[in-house]
Amino acid sequence: MVKLFINEENKTGHIEPEIYGHFSEHLGRGIYEGIYVGEDSDIPNENGMRTDVVSALKELHVPLLRWPGGCFADEYHWRDGIGAKESRKKMVNTNWGGVVEDNSFGTHEFMELCRQLGCKKYINGNLGSGTVQEMSEWIEYMTFSGVSPLTDLRAKNGHEEPWTVEYFGVGNENWGCGGNMTPEYYANEYRRYQTFVRDYNPDAPIRKVCCGANVADYYWTRRVLETAFDHGEHAHGFMDYLSLHYYVHPFGWDVKGSATDFDAEVWYRSLNKALYMDTLVRRHSAIMDEFDPDKKIGMCVDEWGAWYTCEPGTNPGFLYQQNTVRDALIASITLNIFNKHCDRVKIAALAQMVNVIQSVLLTEGAQMIKTPTYHVMHMYRYHQDADLLESSLSGVNQIGIGEWTVPGVTESVSKDANGVITVTLCNLSADAAEEVEILPVNSGYSVLEASVVTHCEIHAHNTFDEPEVVSEKAFTDYRMKERGLVITLPAASVVLIRLKP
Ligand code: AHR
Image 1 (cartoon, protein in one colour):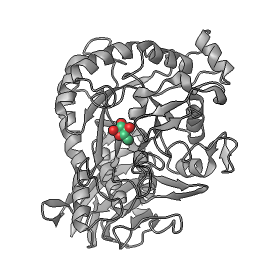
Image 2 (tube, helix red, strand yellow; image 1 turned 135 degrees about the vertical axis):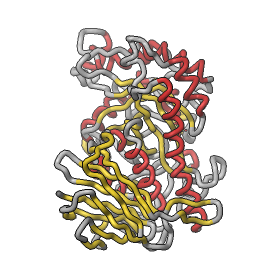
Image 3 (cartoon, helix red, strand yellow; image 1 turned 30 degrees about the vertical axis):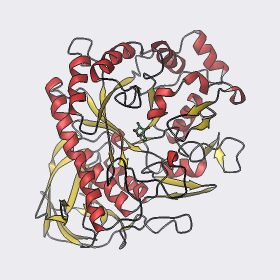
Image 4 (cartoon, helix red, strand yellow; image 1 turned 120 degrees about the vertical axis):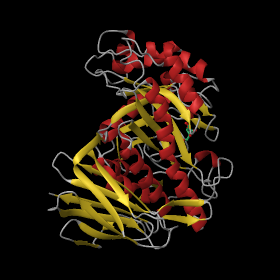
């Protein structure tokens, strides 16, 4: 039997809520239709934001939202997205389907969305095709409270008070769509651009995100830090985070593979690739440790998720895909990894929030469904702002098919401010249940809440006709013992157990 040992006296880190962040780009039906329908839509909305989508997202306690891209960010010119909507400049969304972007969702609309969600703002600036002046003036437009032509313009556009911007990305994927730069060239550009990302409000400083590596490009991490890491007295505020992007493509970037049509071998192949996040975090962290042993810079995994071939019959540039039990497990595996590395991973953003890649919500006209990934994010919300506890598993077998092997179970454990322990477990087996004995050092806990996301079919997913096929259900398959409890994890499942002292 698998045993989970928990040392509830040993807090080994703090899980920042921002690890549970989201990302929404001007891509396909991610923002338009998925979130923003405009004030005149028949779809119920508040100031243009779909009320069904906002209310579902609020249940996740979304801590942070990254916008406007992605690759779109390095082609976005913020002045095109302010002022009267009818006179906003249109553009071609060259990255995503070549469609016309009418800029009706811009800075004011993004701030309104974050207000409704109650989340922090992570804005990604344009370094690839924008100027230093443009970036600097966007910051002034958003955050300056004094008198200037830009604050007058903001007031004229309906917002007299400044907003806060908690996080600002200085470019996106500048090794690729953000300008095809070398790490040295980007890092020098980073030094220059970030200088003009001014803190107009000393009580609410802007945290800067430097563009980090694609997957296992450790050379990028090293060269960027060698060039742009500031050891000096001005280090604070120079670089607060270094990003990392990693997507699970079961068959690689070119082929990707179907979101819903896969066999057990592809199941294990996909989960194996999700587990690779652990290697990436460890190896990039080891390089960061050489420059920043005190871990002042956070790792910001601001794009993660499973990216498949888009749904048949949909625009290939829109990246619309279904979401199955496999995605629930990929989310659970990844979030357990982030929790366990919370000493370094301080921000993460699932790509993307609605209708794009591994979404938590899908929409079709006025209909909206929650995906299996949504339900996992909902279970894991209890880890936000909790302390990571020392925990370990014994008796876990390697399982899988051929070269695609994985550990049978993964876990993470945290304790909140009220002393409640949250245990999240994932059974990676496609077909076998697993008994787990949970052993806290101290006895005397009772189960406060327990839920599960699973299905006997690994391809199971929700549709607009059947929206509840895979959902979070009460979990009852546990029995208390003198010391701890024994639970039976169903095959292909994610389980949440909350223990009350
Ligand atoms: O999330 C989709 C795209 O993936 C983003 O625009 C880009 O940053 C990444 O390559």
